[in-house]
Length: 142
Image 1: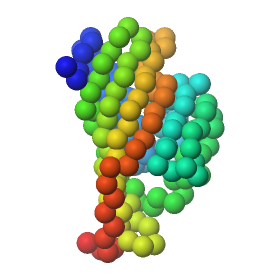
Image 2 (image 1 turned 120 degrees about the vertical axis):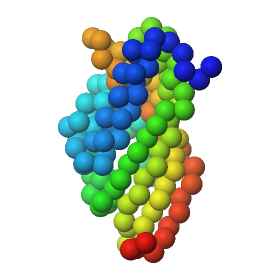
Image 3 (image 1 turned 90 degrees about the horizontal axis):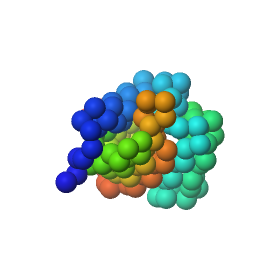
Image 4 (image 1 turned 135 degrees about the vertical axis):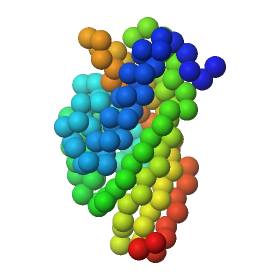
């Protein structure tokens, strides 16, 4: 079954994911960074020039710099699976994002595979691995 564990934890993990997505769309580095554990890891294997970043401070610094290249981004995410086992959970989620680049409007779809941890009653991303699923580039103004 793709959703197992206590309902209150699964709801909190959905809200963690939604907080992350909202912070991306609002370019809120503080709120976005607060979704990560201090010793987190973010892996982007489809972007070998970035690779894997370790630690919340480094992840937020990398994201803040990268977001300068995504004007007007709209980012959405939703879970496909949440499995809670005590203070650890795994989550699979899907993303849809739209943003302007010089070559047109990009519409990207992706997948995250996550490990989450509950620290002092609050859930955080411990490890996130992102993979591209689909990219569409269209003319601006459509």
